[in-house]
Image (cartoon, one colour):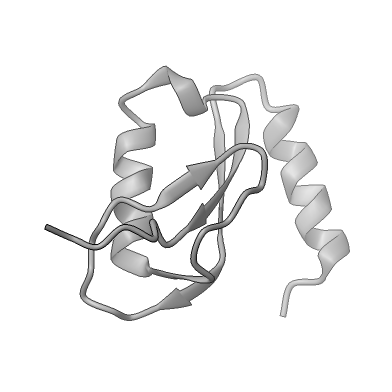
Length: 84
């Protein structure tokens, strides 16, 4: 198990790396089949307290394509919006 101190050291390494980065911090991960785009908040806001691994993957794919999350630590949670 990774300790909180280890996580903080890793985060500092990322922040000081000199490269573009995004830290994704998902709430409780599930194996649900849903790949809905999660609610993403650089302010640490959360809507639903679970998120699928597929949803996290979808966010990570998006984060490589748009500049708005670069240099941000982003809380990821369920969108709280029913799929259409």
